[in-house]
Amino acid sequence: MYPRNAVSPERIAIGAIVQISDGAVQTSGVSIKVMPQGGAAGAGGGTTGYEEGIVHYIPTQAETNYASFVVIAYKTGCIPVAQTIVTSKSATTGYAGIDWGQVLNASTTVNLSSTTVKTATDVETDTADIQSRLPAALVSGRIDASVGAMASAVLTATAIASDAITAAKVASDVTTELQSGLATASALSAVAGYLDTEIAEILADTNELQTDWANGGRLDLLIDAIKAKTDNLPAAPAATGDIPTAGAVADAVWDEILSGHAISGSTGEALSAAGGAGDPWITALPGSYSAGQAGYILGTNLDAAISTRSTYAGADTAGTTTLLSRLTSTRAGYLDNLSGGAVALASSILDAAGIRSALGLASANLDTQLDALPTANENADALLGRNVAGGSSTGRLVKEALYFLRNKWTISGGTLTVFATDDTTSSWTASVTQTAGDPVSASDPS
Image 1 (cartoon, rainbow, N blue to C red):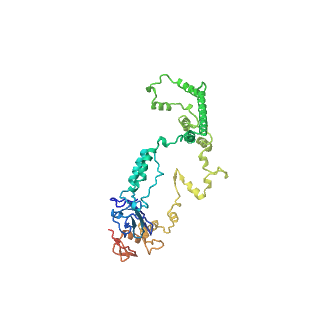
Image 2 (image 1 turned 90 degrees about the horizontal axis):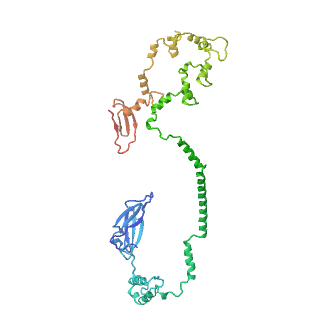
Image 3 (image 1 turned 135 degrees about the vertical axis):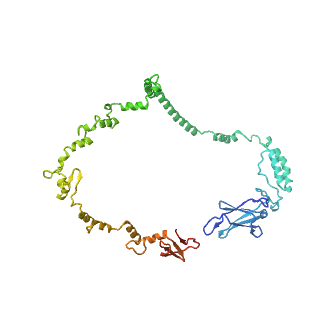
């Protein structure tokens, strides 16, 4: 029950206030109205708060001084939420008072026959407590008259009939209770079976260990093998100073004879092959080289002097036709001019006319023709004067597109004006859409 007229009223959770348009839970701006029982609603005078989307309200003391009151939370455009609070007779939280004026037949004798009493002291204490909570009219009479008799009869020897508790009467209940705390026969059987299995496995492992430890067993043989290795160790290992240094080891490796280190794929084999009596160029080819090795390929395929292959003598035969025999007479003439390793080309091959013809020039004056070619600056200027879409040198030109990036431009009355390089002459204009409050209306680079 909610305490009535308490000095510090309890907080009331009203619920979530939800925006109708988008379902958003409100966490601010919610108003409160309090409507007391039998009165009109008014603006709440307490404290409004929010927690996890739930609106809560702490009313004033005066707002709680009613049998009940309604708390309404609302906000424009939102679904309102209300809570009805029923107060208790007491102002203390957790207590609920009883108005005996509202109890029917308040003077009727109260039947306490079903009350459980354990001891005489408990009876007296509980009776006194009950009497303090009942009207005086109920206290006198039957309750006062019966208290003494009830107290004296509780758990006395005479109150328990002779043989009221016999072995037969308690046997079933006591036995059941005792057995409930003990293991059943089936449970004990399961435990016994589990122990038998585990013990058998332990015995098997123990027997195996005993076999391994026996003379000649696996562990015994392993220990014997280790001992045989350690028996070969010197009784007094060499001092640290007798251990060869890294340099000594390296020197010993380089001084090792290669003849005993020719295992296929080893470093020794590679060094032996590279050594070749200290000069691999004196090794005969193909000699002892096998197919696929460089010595075999050179010795097998270069089986004649190259000079014997420079002239053609005889009919075309696969594998023996020389290069010169395949050239036309004109090209053969070019090669005939090779002398002493230097190339001497006939004057008729690279004369002025031949060059003009190769370049597609008609005039005999090569300088004139070269001067007629456009320069790099002329090519650049022509590019700047071309249409941005290509195909012409009119319309929207490349240089005009660059004017907007480098030259002055202004926006006035919805028109963008881009100026030429003098920042005075208009180059091109465009209609623009302006946004209210946009401060940018011109650009004037230095």
